[in-house]
Image (cartoon, rainbow, N blue to C red; front, top):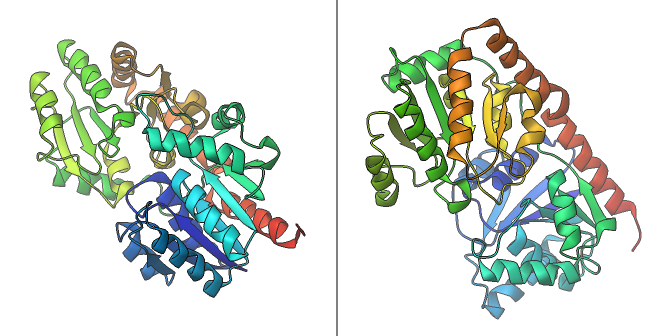
Length: 376
């Protein structure tokens, strides 16, 4: 089959990463990608694996661009159109429908959204999509179990929902002592006893301030640590972030790494991974990636982070630096013990049993075949 993916953009995000993995590891079908925005992180990566990618630099008020998209879909003649993220579900779904390809699958990645934090345009589109969910998509993939009830309450057609969690390549994501040595040498961490990590773009939903406040509490408890922060806009040029770090007197304890492509190296180099998000998460890839490398996690109870971690790590409420600091303290005193070693093994085992890449690919293939063969 020919699967056309229409996605909002190709930047550094969970949806983009999952789309890339599907294109890379599914050998049964031909994949084509249309990005409504421009070239970004995953454009060269998709090109490298032989996937044709079109970038539209789309303006949502441009009728000309919209009908160019409709015409492009007609020319490509896909068997299935799969759209990713809210804006692409709306624009790509409508365009595919008008192009005559009505075998459309939406892909929902958010687990939640909040008024005042989520853009009003996004909220409006979600309301429109709830009505269109009875007309346009044949199925709606939801990556987060928590999101099912949330989107049902928003009025989405629950009969179209199908839960497919993310999958991970456990051959590349694994414990690797050499990668740890490289990471520690590269970042001058040789004499550091407690290395904390966080990988997330600078965004309100990722709530870096929550993590920084927790680290400040940890510092006041006289616990020595180094925290490695990575992600888009996580660098010394981010004046707002730098101001908070200086204000909390954490300069000596924090290193800003910027955007990192070698996630496996980061996850092997740290002792514990922290996810500090306050809202808007679906199925956070970085948590599963850390666990695949036998790195225990401390996560806020947002999206499906708690489902991924289970009893292998610590789950704390969002927006609560005291609880996060307590979990960090517990992990600090547990490192090196038999209990810690068992925790590391359990983390890897949970990902292997539930979220291997082959499981996700099989589920998508089953879905595509079902939608393709069904007469509408």
